[in-house]
Image 1 (spheres, rainbow, N blue to C red):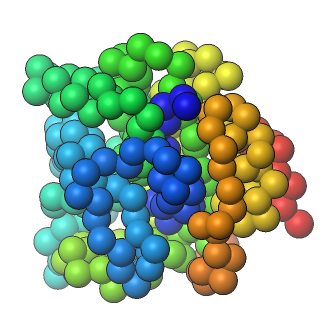
Image 2: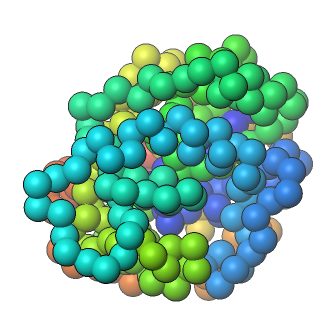
Length: 261
């Protein structure tokens, strides 16, 4: 059983992937967040791992404020995130995510000393480089993605209905910027990591189940599709996809061997 980190922009199938591995016997962390309407079968995230990544990303709050901030009455946004918001933080692509201190390093080492972990957090797109510096085995990094318009539509719904995001401002154009920035940082982080350890998976590949045999062979653990419930695929597309986002998405489809019709 090879250890795993599961990443990808939020609402891209990371919870489904984490749930599949959790039910295959992987450790997802203690005190997992409870299910809610957007993820009725669970998120498979925990406050300890998320807290490490929040602490890494806090340094970059307010660093990328644009001149034309949208006018709104909400105190938080991707440019001014609050606690728990940083999976939707805005960090420009040329920003180096290198912030680390003894507490962060110690907490990462604490998290990864467990055998058979599969930790999931969309923030790993930004923080993977720091984690990888502490991971000394051949852990697999699973990069989830999904059609950008579907993903952005789901993010906007989450921000509309989740209580902890009630004071968080986001709009369609900003959500697409976050999608692009998040994966841009992911590509930067994996550029120096052995390709054998990187797996790109499209959400639809989990729904049809065919990728699971290949993944089971790579991870060295039996995986079945019993956790996959296609009826939960309910999200709707949101707007025309920007050209840079579409180009990046098509590149990831090729890396995953996925041909979306």
